[in-house]
Image (cartoon, rainbow, N blue to C red; front, side, top):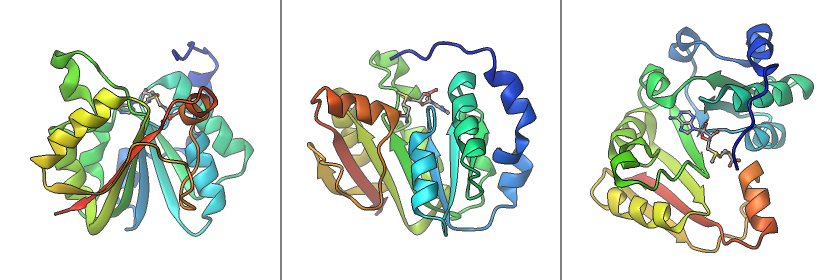
Length: 203
Ligand SMILES: C[S@@+](CC[C@H](N)C(=O)[O-])C[C@H]1O[C@@H](n2cnc3c(N)ncnc32)[C@H](O)[C@@H]1O
């Protein structure tokens, strides 16, 4: 699924700073952040924020069109407990305070199938090291994907990381009450594609 560029999204993001966070604001965030990396068009962020009004969600999305759609959802639904950052996660993650993040959600991350691109995967060891720093000691990473190769390769990377899997589900039914469907997830579920999910904690 390629996202078709929409020219309205760039000015929309410029106009609607109220649903976004600057790097400076991230540095001053309170603890207990729920962070989604690669939020796409923001359905997960929107639904999680609506369903959990006492929690604070941050999404990071590097694609301008996706970030614009996400911002529009937050504006139109008057969401105040979720913000979107239009940026590459690599530029942003080091700005979060150490141990300030409760949960990191990786939803249908880009699979980057070519070996030379594996370092760009959001489950690459360089990203896991950054997640380790910003996650609380009892924090979690929740990773959902349709992509079997990405899932299996990620399991191997995790074995040599500072994280361990406490749950591995190769046909996750979507029945966790603290979860929401993403745009990609809805489409894969409609096609009958099994959803894989893994939950990681610090060793
Ligand atoms: C396959 S899409 C899935 C979108 C959404 N999570 C969903 O499930 O519908 C992956 C998204 O992650 C974003 N992404 C990938 N790498 C990223 C990075 N390093 N920083 C921020 N966003 C990233 C892409 O731009 C894309 O919108």
